[in-house]
Length: 230
DNA sequence: GCCCAGGAGCCCG
DNA sequence: CGGGCTCATGGG
Image 1 (cartoon, rainbow, N blue to C red):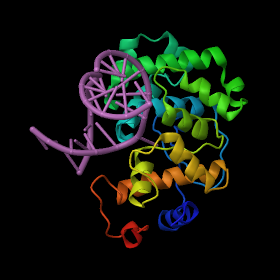
Image 2: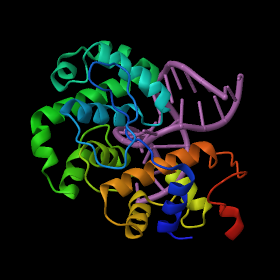
Image 3: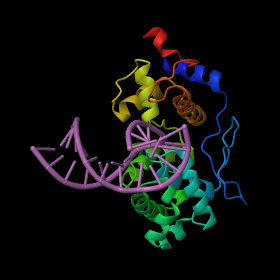
Image 4: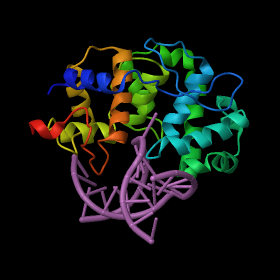
């Protein structure tokens, strides 16, 4: 089974995903926006995705959502307001997302970075250059950087996460502790370099990992049937 | 009570 | 340069 076939099977099995969730205007609850075309994002949505990418580090989205609702209520999906906020107050708002002391620091680092560079400048940068800049921010590793580039800046870079490693290693296509950049290169080479494709594929991988390819494998009804060709 | 979730940094040999 | 430790809440 090759990369493109896996993508097609997942599309067939799960259909369109609405990824990444953002909060509509005049609301405080993030929601998914289904659709098979690239939607133009507001600056507020971009910032929400960037903050969300930090908040979701090793954390279930459900808990992140609670944190984002609180941030929305206090109008904290905002670069200046995060910079001005007391770290302990920020930590209190994002408590439900776990690691709240660390994440409060990370959000402030990120807000400062965005303030110094500006969204406009960042989104017009070359992908690899942008990636290097993001990686220099304390609290931003490869997955977080790539999520920001793909989902907030809508530039084509494939996001690797624990789910991707799990699924691809179970398919026999990589080692389970494969290097991030190696698996990223492997997958990207099997696909068109396209934001929507990368976006959908990663979302499908998450969906598949939650439904069937969990840590404890649930192979009944799996659309990939990896065991049948291993 | 246990395990797990859309990781990253730091320290240590 | 890799391995182990820490950070932490909420849901199953």
